[in-house]
Image (tube, rainbow, N blue to C red):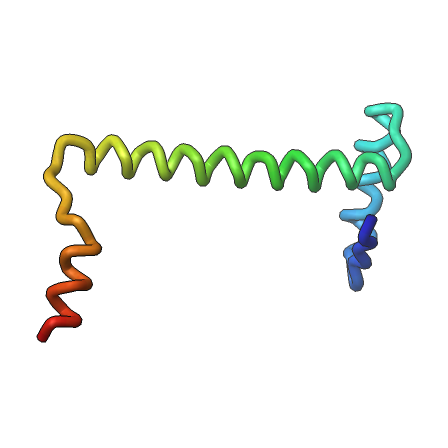
Length: 76
């Protein structure tokens, strides 16, 4: 599994992360993995929500077949 190195982290941020890890009965490493996994999952959920919104907004509209448009463009 790949490793990540975070440079120049403020000491106060590290202190907060250590406190959070201890409160969750985890090592700092495990806490950081949890935070990063949750952030990545949230990003994926947000992307799906945006896609669903676009689909709803475009629903019911007629859509041109892009293959036809490409053929017309090539024939010019």
